[in-house]
Image (cartoon, rainbow, N blue to C red; front, side):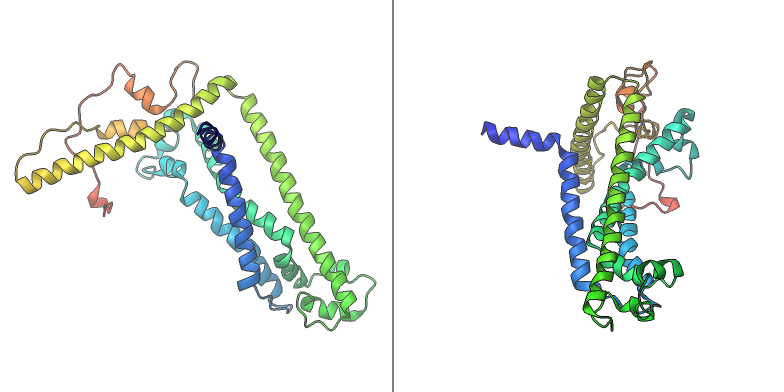
Length: 310
């Protein structure tokens, strides 16, 4: 039992690593399915490049959109900013807002970069795309010191319809695959270096020590877990009170509820400051001496502007 708890604690502490590993497995599986099931290179000069590039970059673009769409940090920052643009730069901290947006975009780029790397290391999509380029520089690179037939049959090399000899076709395929894998490894190396430099720069400019930063991360994680559990419990009690009042046809019991301004304040992004020993906007709000304790009589939803809950 103790060993099981030790293993469970290890995986809980390495949630990011486990998540990225699971994402990598899904990416590899998805790429193999695309390559074997749906991808069929047309093998002609007019369509190869567009078709191959679509399969190479299309899923990456979709993964980027999904990464942004499912980012709670993005919606926390963005929600309501059209009506109040200052929410993007609370307390005039525009640099902090830019840093948060860059962090959100970087996190959303993980899955697309994984897809590009896996697809390029496999080489199937790149072979189709590069064989359809009619640029003299590309054609001269692959058909150097070869017959004119090589130029004419280059687009058919990814298929079995090429009129070139099997040795020539295999030589061209190996060149395509080598270029694709070099490009894939270049992206991996570049991403790893950028990630390392970004982490070093972030930690170097940190206003808090490493141990306090670790405590801060644990606190934010635990606060989010408890906030989700508490909101579910409180929403359940509010729903039960409202339903009981409706079906029993009586005035509902008073139930305190945070006012609209309080929700706005705790929804801001918080940046650690040495002058304020707080670890979140929630802690900063509850420890304020001038805190407004007046409750909201009812939840405020802007129905007239089209916001509707179903």
